[in-house]
Image (cartoon, rainbow over the protein chains, first blue to last red):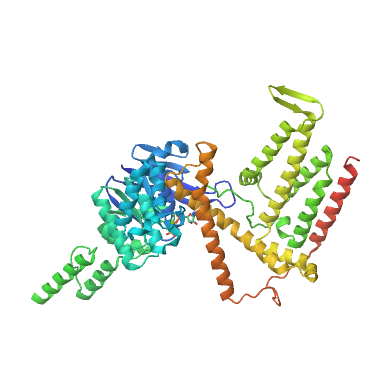
Length: 289
Length: 267
Ligand SMILES: Nc1ncnc2c1ncn2[C@@H]1O[C@H](COP(=O)(O)OP(=O)(O)OP(=O)(O)O)[C@@H](O)[C@H]1O
Ligand SMILES: [Mg+2]
């Protein structure tokens, strides 16, 4: 399902003294099956934008199009339940949504709401527990007896369980240990590839954006200010720093090397592997001279 | 979604009401709550309502904002009104349809009680909207100071109050977040039978309680770590200052009570 934003504007708390404009004239489109990263300084409106994708917020102005459903300020909440089934959101700190007596039941909550029979929901829950690397016996435990990282995984399982075709991740690894981060990011990437998901990742990690995304959307003060492939976006270091964003470590390192050698060493290195190849290439050329 | 709820929220401003000393405001609201029960006929209830509207105007609070923010409470008011319409069976019969009979006294009682309720809610809301939680607590603590002699834990009570007030908006925001997360997982609060709807609240309440307890624990630890040891010997940074306008408010109240006594029906 393709997604597009046309002149989307949103204000919180309209008609109160706390009224706050969070989005202005956001435009952009996200192709079905693509992996898009949304980056931006804190408070730039990333989470607000995500909430529009399944109608949890309706735009004050403009249109959000998800598949063939248009969401405008007039869209009725009833029309949105079909979209909610298609769009899974892993919120910032999703462990705050856990409530059931057992982990298994909590994971089954989503699918059951969307009409999946209990037996199948249970099967999925057990598969997901394994997939997310949780110990087998956790199924019958209370989610509140788990560690923070484990709770996070259960919450993620709770979203994956209803098999959305659009998966939205709002800083899914914030506050996890480095190893857990990597595992979870890799897992999302595998799922993205295997199940041909449309994935949207909000992240403060330029490295994750560079490594996984096909496209990057940059938000700044409620506006969509830049978009393109990671190469395009990260070759724009000046603009990015204007939006208070940095470069991925690999690109920053590449820039340092280039300064040292006084010449460009080829394509932008978005992963450590690419960087290693580019640097060794450059060193070899240097040696031959 | 719940961002419009304003009960217990503070909106900074610089109207006459905002500038009043919290002590005079608290005293006024407290006495006003008692005075509301003096009203017993149409003119006294109308006076109360008019006076409240006047206070809202002076505080420069927009009615639309109040109305939106107090919707859930207004719902209760309407509910009370209807209950009286239907269940009070005194006075002349005005209207009859099948088993519904509406009597004159029912309408009168309903309207009176609703006004009473409404005026109380509006006055206290004006208080919290125009006074920061810290001022309210400071004012409360000073006003209750004499009761310390009776071993009333005034400081602790004031602290409890300020913490509650402080966390109302936080809990609202939290509820909003959790609500969104559960809606995204297909939970449905707006359709289905009453029983289904009550069931749908569980996924909202459990995380809310869990986080409230966690917050309470964190706060207790943070206070302990920073050496909080209760009220004994604490000094304060903000000093309250009683001005002429505060004295005026007290006189205004006395005047209001006098007029109420004068206009209320004898019995
Ligand atoms: N419930 C709310 N009520 C009022 N204003 C809000 C609310 N949520 C967010 N905002 C405001 O909207 C703006 C955008 O917030 P948003 O949460 O979308 O930012 P973000 O890009 O996700 O930031 P972060 O990276 O810190 O998560 C901010 O200025 C914020 O203060
Ligand atoms: Mg955010």
